[in-house]
Image 1 (cartoon, rainbow, N blue to C red):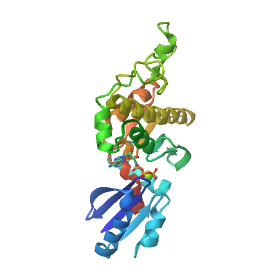
Image 2: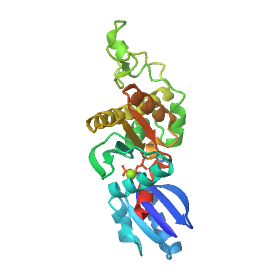
Image 3: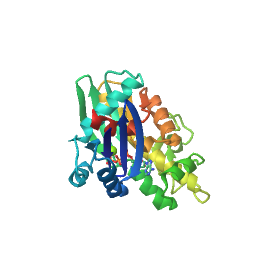
Image 4: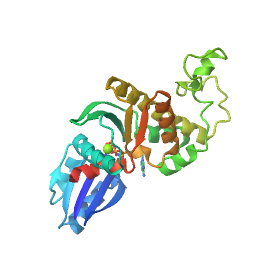
Length: 265
Ligand code: ATP
Ligand code: MG
């Protein structure tokens, strides 16, 4: 069996490959030593391939590894394979890996270039959610956020123009959390706050993606990373915002495993 591991800042993404079949698994990065023990005990016959920020740490502790890739190369190899399987053929595109932080890339037939990063990502989602609502379960956060309404938290363009014609759609966010001082925030629920947090992350990364796509002469923006996982609020905001700017957002199924898949390729 071949095992690909993308050891990230928050999550360990693992892909087990046997007889052409793939099995995916995710664990918290805090369990990295438990995973290493398991691999050293039960997977002595298997080929282990590593990538991600914690790959070197794993490599030092594992009895035997077969290869280690730079995460940006592995992720692009895996993403290319997933896009092919999902029959998404766009020659020229930008992609955003929304992990703990977010990294931005431009890609064409010749390969990928990492063009930048932002500290706003899934870690921001988790951290601000904890500060504002004391919740720390990703699954609970994204579920509750669906029931929220961020209208009183975010300042929208029409708030500023106050009834006058707006040069851009009035319901676009002018300032994330910018309405807190003047809005009716006494009745805000945790769901409202969580939705606003996700809005901040989604709109920030999408705005950067749109600008990068513009500068790269493409309309295609691809999103991967565990921050998209079952995150309907995030997905809807990304799709709507990109659509308003005439860009096409593509959220890749199992995209968070791109690095783990690519590590083996
Ligand atoms: P990086 O690439 O920046 O080192 P990473 O590879 O660990 O980090 P991802 O796994 O792509 O990053 O994404 C991590 C984010 O995914 C978290 O910050 C959180 O928002 C979200 N997430 C999804 N599922 C979970 C989960 N079960 N537990 C914690 N966070 C989760
Ligand atoms: Mg990662």
